[in-house]
Length: 295
Image (tube, rainbow, N blue to C red):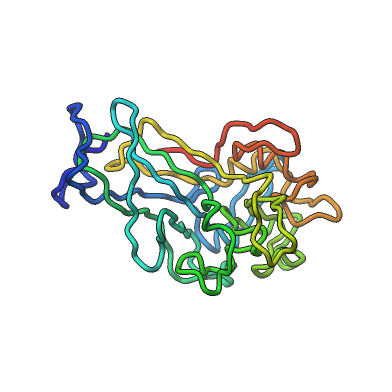
């Protein structure tokens, strides 16, 4: 449980023991911490991980980034209040935040040196027991020209095109059977993909061409995440890509498809990935999202 006080020293660290309703007049800072992992092991560029997927393969990742938005804190009575994100001019813009676990070293050389593992903002003072957020970028910000967008929406490696919008989740890796150097380029841009990739974004977006913003997307592919028991002072939100890949064969790729699963319909590599992200896919129902957990 998180008690948010007007005092900055107590804003994200005190435990709540009472049931005071959130104030609507006084705000205080809040920090949510994130961590990247592969089957429980901390994500690090240059590190290899064994036991991934149905073949228990070894993978060597080269990218791991994601967007979160619509962050809310959950009060004791189940009501929610938005977390007003800090407009830092680098990692957060309006209600969207970029989480970046890679550091540009070793196999992550196509990434950036800077990392970001927190979401920061302010909320009305009060006692909060949970958090909710979306893996994704809201439609109103998801389709446009990244070259003129404010940071972090100008990170072109996280963008497909105006029609498809942003990659809400970008994970690239080489594997035992598919070294990263042999993969074809990402068909929607953003540089070379690794041997097996998970690029999540909206699909079947109605527009005249990839250079035109759509009117709607048949598959928004926004993942709603809720932890109604979460203590921001003590706990971390873990994004474990190994759990998403648990039912995948990362050593092969379906012929004539994008490397791994890039959210496109009719890709045989996508059903287990999308199911574990908590999303429906090609008529199959959504499973329970397993990417995010709390520790």
